[in-house]
Image 1 (cartoon, rainbow, N blue to C red):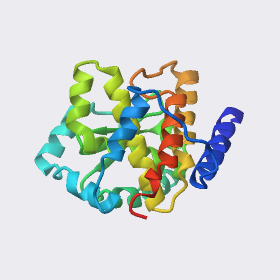
Image 2: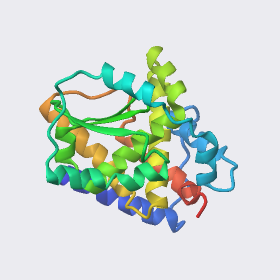
Image 3: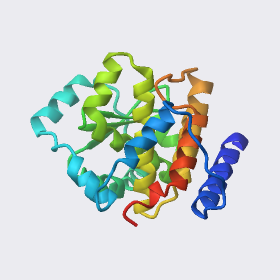
Length: 239
């Protein structure tokens, strides 16, 4: 809990000092995943971030395809959702609506040893019972905002995973972090919850199942990406 609280405090200070322009510019290493992810956002020339998302948003999946995705997910894993769980899940509605996926993506809570939130086939959002119990509603919103970011890079992400291209996958994950942070800002939610949620999930999984993904950015990469993007005003797009 102390490590998690320290990270939250560090990010809060980072966001406050960066937006006030009181920090010195931070140069990212050329060719790093942070630099590549930031370059993606710098190229956006739409009038607002909302306009950009509307322009690149993929068509909604069909009911037939959604049924196929359901069929591919193992049966017998679903968890009975309690009233407390329902309240947390209801908090995800603004995130889904912002990305125009309120009536498209279905949420399933599954039994799994690890804390996990993942978008399957652009149709089903899987949330493990462990993650649902671990994360408060605000952090769950942040993680789901990240997962919905995957849809904007879906083809590129699937190809990178097939090639076992870890660097490209980490860059795309940072882009999804960027979309999540902008989403939270647009909905007037606390952006620090993204890092605290990621930290909580990593700490839980390291303790309970001893897993860590080489396909996700390290904490330092995420911090450097956030710091530089804040200094460039990225999270103020469309404000």
